[in-house]
Length: 396
Image (cartoon, rainbow, N blue to C red; front, side, top):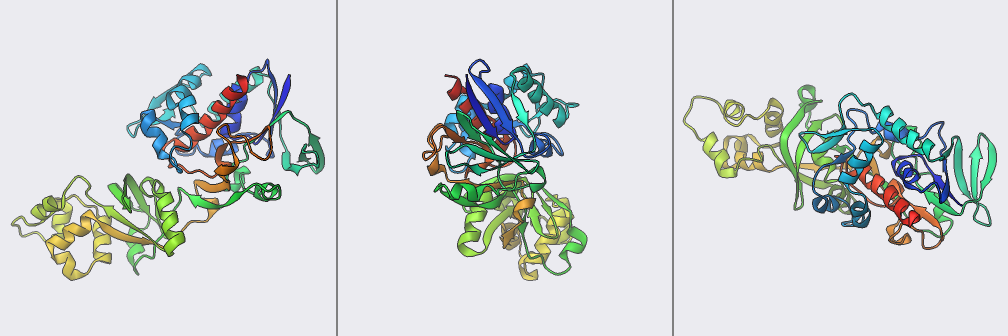
């Protein structure tokens, strides 16, 4: 029986361990925290979005770089995940946003415990307080276990160390240097699915900080994302901007500033907006924006703060601003405040089965690879699919 050492205790690691054939492998998970699944639990704050329900052909296009995870996602789809969760006792439902959650009443800890029960049934051994510190001269694994060094020799090694966000969960990216020293190409971590910095006009935040912009769309270059945003002291955050993270990040790196446009009324054309603004009435333009176009006070405040008085009084220019309201982003939030990160092990360093070219029988899965995905269940599904597909490869 071969031994498999899985380093890390996040979603991809847990799914891999759950998939491996216990008749073929003795599986060990090494976790530096007291318990596994801490980031798994943090991801459940505010609703545990496990995956998304859209068709798999559309699903695979949501990732950056494009199609990177196609093989893994087709090997273990979003539907496969829901079916598998049902087998271990976790029923799911699809919300109005087409996101998939555990049925109401099931808490994230219960989902984690269902995983752990599955691992227990498969005789998977979990070693807590084991922080990976690198390789010995003969490529055995070195761990620090409560200030004592432990050496582990395994037939197969799978790294699932996570990215660099939410360091409180143990996902801090400090392992990057260990791979660099072995000649493995890495990419510096950057924040993704995060807040973006905006220089708000003086006085704007006094009445608008914490206010939501709902039923909008946001565009960057030629990509358009529907969703919502919240105005913060730092800038903007929310689903509509998270999904544009790769484009925003590239613009910031290239130009030092990223340009986005918000459509406050994505279901209305410019001509329709002009028509509604041009009706004969004694109402002021501000009243028309509120009553005829149903713009929120915050949307109206944005228009007044960013466009000139002359443009505000010009129906054509005002309609253009409502349809395509420009905002300049001058930075992103710190990595530790981001939902996820991009960067880590360069994808050129692994083969189609996630095995490192330079280290045979050693694999890398999960967020520690240099890929990106929007929120909405895509991040977790990507990790689950990688773990499951590698498990299927091992079981052959």
